[in-house]
Image 1: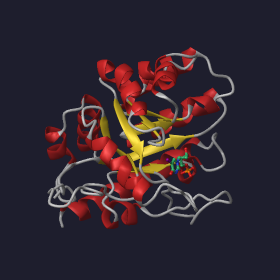
Image 2: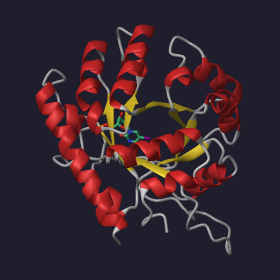
Image 3: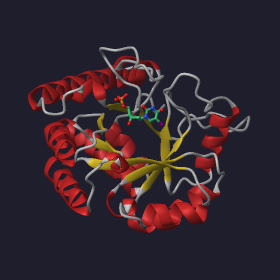
Image 4: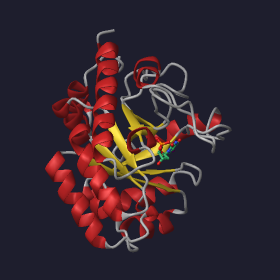
Length: 274
Ligand code: 5IU
């Protein structure tokens, strides 16, 4: 059962290079923390990443938030990724026809496929969104997460929609490494009689916070313990719980990242010890 296997053991069962690299990084650095950095100034963005990098297996970006973006930001982000040994996840949420997402993923000013080990897509267009992204991402050894659920109040991503997302992933296992979701997805919506408890999809989970229950715009937070132990997720995504409302408070940001790393890792140790 995947709830009980270590990240390192699971790395050996994966085939996608980005999935293997992520699980190996988690095992090596002893962290299941992904820090989400939604901040408009490149200088703050890079300073936060430099501060939290040592505690993170993955850094989640929204490059379209950067008001002063130019490609040198990416070069510096890649340097930080090497310096601190983390992967990069551009949270692009692709959701268009195959041909369009191919152009958006490979090109534009951001050239996401060039530098982002992992990206994500809404399953709403159907399998063509995965096929389009895979045509760009697979040759570059990238991985894709499908959005099976969301952390927001009133989300429409549930029930039959979530099950269809998991089916779509099953048909594209070379490229789809798992889900943005709120719980483990192995076996969800599987045809009767098929034993799929050990599909080993990676579950990357936003909506994690220790201090707040939510924000004023529908975000809902759960604790690392709830996410990792009770719901069987693999990676906790934490944004404002770490960088708060002051991107310049680097010492505070560092200590919060360390705290979430410890909470996430001890929850994981609880889980794999049964
Ligand atoms: N994010 C969510 N919930 C979701 C999905 C993505 O919060 O269901 I899909 C993103 C939005 C933001 C980050 O970039 O994860 C969470 O940030 P905070 O921890 O600051 O709420």
